[in-house]
Image 1: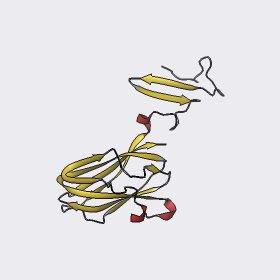
Image 2: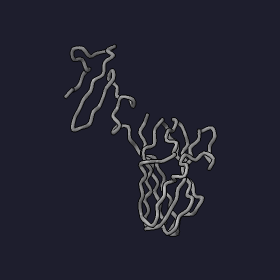
Image 3: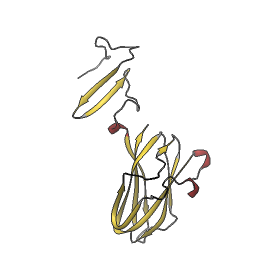
Image 4: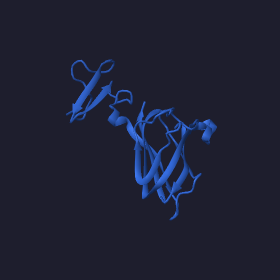
Length: 164
C-alpha cells in the first residue's frame, strides 16, 4: 500500500520506461510512468455501456423512434442487449457516423443482417455480432433506430464496448 508522497521505490521513478503491474483479486492493473492509460488498463477497467431508452408512453414504442449518443472515445463493440418492460418483439438498428455527418442514417448501419432483436421475450443479448462493424472512432455519433416494436412500451438498448 502506497501512502502520501511520490512513488519512488528503487528502479522506478521519473523517466523509467518500465511498467508496474498490480494484481489483486484476479484483476490486473498496469501503470506506466505513474498513469493508468486505456491501452495499459485491463479490459475490465475499459468496458462500459453505450445505450438509449425508448418509452412509448403506455403504447408500443413507435417504429422510426431514434436516440443519438456521442461516443467520446474509440472503442470496440463486444455485445448488444435489448431489455423490454413487457414480453413482445422488437428490432433496433444501430447506425454510426462522424460528428461532421450528424445525424447518422440507415446508410450508416453497422449491424448487417444481425440487428438487435427481441422475439416474444423481454430480453435478448448478442455476443457474436455476425457481420457487424464493431470498431467505433472517438467522437462518433451512434444512433439507435427502432425498426419495429410490438407490445413493449419501454425498450432499452445497450452496446457493451471496450475502450481502445
